[in-house]
Image 1: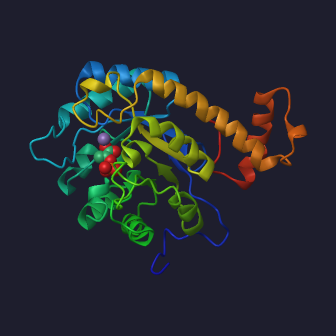
Image 2: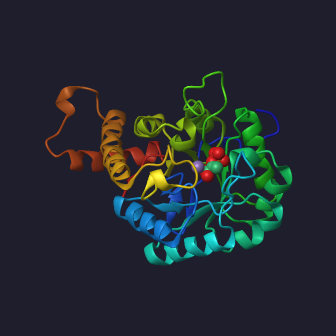
Image 3: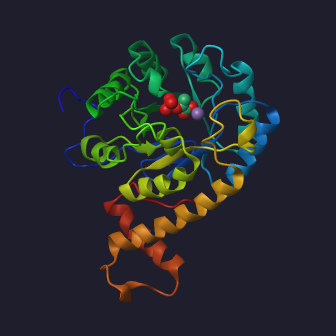
Length: 306
Ligand code: PEP
Ligand code: MN
């Protein structure tokens, strides 16, 4: 790909590891979970405690919401950021939250551990430059009409400002298909792993918009080699002020986390075993542990969900 000086895959195939308060993107399989929007103190804190208990590594939640309609809930702004901060203090989970305006980057960055740039702003070049100058880790979501090359060039804008801490996130694109909210393009996972050294996450919530598809797409993303997931979880999805149809409740998220752990063991065995049934061992956990350790060297994007 042309003009990718900083984000292109390295000749030695080494990959970036971005450490956010001990959460290692590009090394461990990172699960970011939390509500679409920060709504109330109870909703934010209870969701944070629940996702932490289920094994999530970071808390997401929008305080500034880019909505299709100007009359829809736009987020709580500063009040929302303060609630996220409270949830962080309560649970220790680092915070991922979206910034939508160049003027807000520095002060939102005081609350966020990772600043999210959403699909609708992927090619907002002033925002990208400002995000680059901030030096904060940036979660850059794929624009819904963007090619891989356009997306990686947007990451290049951030790195060109001297900020190497960019995490990519596939969140689905617009196609002729209307059954799903977006068409989740999982082929971007191996594509990014081939073309760039940056970590790649998958957002199956916006990627499908359909509750029953979040679990299979999450497991598929892990098998495809993704470095993690961003998933919407709400303590009471029917009451949510945005994206109520696609947010998992706590029980659904707990179930998903258990299946992700089983999938990780399965994948580690698949990648290291000889493929024969005799390779199956009595103690699955030990086998998975051994496999994931040997896998770490060849495949840094698979690690423990713990
Ligand atoms: C979000 O993650 O809150 C969001 C709005 O996602 P996207 O930018 O991918 O639509
Ligand atoms: Mn949402």
